[in-house]
Image (cartoon, rainbow, N blue to C red; front, top):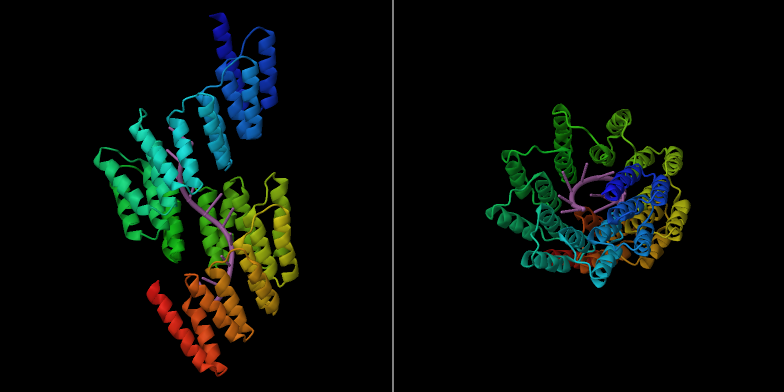
Length: 456
DNA sequence: GTAGGGTTAG
């Protein structure tokens, strides 16, 4: 009895050290405990696994698993769930799935938590069918799905392009007595907004209001973002003031959403005002906040200040991500420094970032606008993937260089890829062809454009 | 264990 009580005390002590991320102290307590005859149990080690995953790495967490086996304590489903969830949190999704399989191999039965995390990983890996079959296993098996199970399903379906199925599942669950809570509503509203199904999104938003649940700052951010996406800047700003008047606290998500929208529409002064508010509020900056700020400085032509922020970001112990680099590349291009921009593009891959479509698009535009159209074409041809931005950017720059025939060819290859083109882009090529007397080519291009519109 | 933010053309 005494020793069990002591182990509980030991666990409480270690848990509080782990919570404060003081892993060395936790280990000292563990050693002292053993010396005094207080033996750690499965809870002790599970606490450590969770902390090592969060603070250091999944490998560090995994090594605790070995230590516990050496100490004669068998890992349980919670040990594995901590590792699986830890890997998922760090976006090591394939690792999560490997750990799940390892758990099965060593004969530990997964519980609902394990299945929920597994489903979430599969959706995030773009494997909705596999996630679906896990869901089916849960429903047909002995486990009872909980709210998180349904939320993960609805979110995963939305994010994999199955918004309709998500909505159907939601309605189906409701008819069987499922009472959605704020997370479910937010997931669905966000999914519908992103799929541009605004009527349906508004309906769910109304249902949320009459359900008795209060929308939270996440709901507001989702709706605000939706307005900005649909180019309804003023409506979005109204939601911002509504949020303020109702006393919602603003976090980095809400601030960054608004600042980015203002920067994008060239309302730099207002963006600066909001940034001041964000700074006054004392929110800790994360990499996204820094990126938003760096982008604002670039748009103002304050490249030196932007680079200074880059140092600040690293001093704060954060790491630049692919957005940071792309923003810098774009800033360099817009400042007319295409050489350095292109070098930064290669630097990005040297840093281990995979191919970044947006960064390439920025450099193609930069080269074109700097009058180096042949280099732009070369870069275009070297790309392993292209989107409608890539084509549009090159076509406009070809028009700028009066290379209308080539522009027409690129426009046609864009249509052939099934990508959308802008009216302004089509207009630029057609007018250009006519101006240089290639009326026949213009006519042919026009009919191809019409045809592709019919096939869309 | 589940929800929201940041980069490109016209």
